[in-house]
Image (cartoon, rainbow, N blue to C red; front, side, top):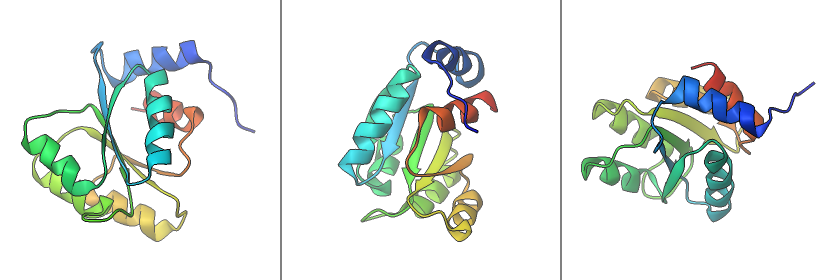
Amino acid sequence: MTSQIGSSNVKKIITCKMTTKKDAKALIVDDDSMAHTLHKHLLSRFGFKTFTAENGKQAIELFRSGEHFDLITMDFQMPVMDGIEATKTLRDMGVDSKILGVSASDKSAVMELFIEAGVDHFFTKPLTLDKLARFFKNI
C-alpha cells in the first residue's frame, strides 16, 4: 500500500532534510521534454527552482561555468553523453550535489551502473511526489 504525502508535509521534509536555503536549485538532465515538464512540476512542489539540460555534456558545462545545483535528476540514456558518464565526471570534478539517477528501465544492471557512478539514489521512471518525498525524508 502506498501512502500519499501531502504538500505541506513534503515542504517540511525538503526544508528540514534537504536544505535550509530558500532558493534551492535543481537541474533536470534529460533529453525528453515530457520528463522535463514532469520533473519541473514535481520539484517545484518541493520549492526548487528548476533548470534543464538536454544531455550530460550540457550538465557538466553548467558546473564548469560556475553554476551550482542542490539536486540533479540524471537520466540514464541520452545523446552526446549519457547519465553514467556525466555522473562519473561530475563526481570526479568534486560536485557534491545530490544526484538522482532515473531511467525507464527497471533492470538492476542500470541501477548498479548508476550507483557505481556515484548517484545518491536511483528511481525507475516516472518520478512521483511520493518517491521524491521518501528520498528527501531519508537524507
